[in-house]
Image (tube, rainbow, N blue to C red):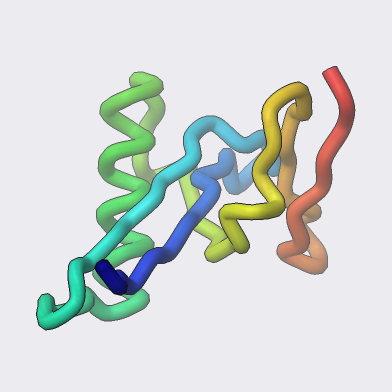
Length: 87
């Protein structure tokens, strides 16, 4: 089954610390939400899951293959690039 898959990290917009990973999948024939809708949903779900204020969160689209176990993730606030540090 083909699908449209997208992944996001939700991060604190003041510190860059990633607080949540969000993955979306739309089956073939389904309608994909817009990028803005996906980012908003990622932030809302991340806020609820981690009990964070959504006003301090932002989302960054990433390749799911870049998210591996055993790493802590952050976003460089000036370049908006994903950074990883081994645990």
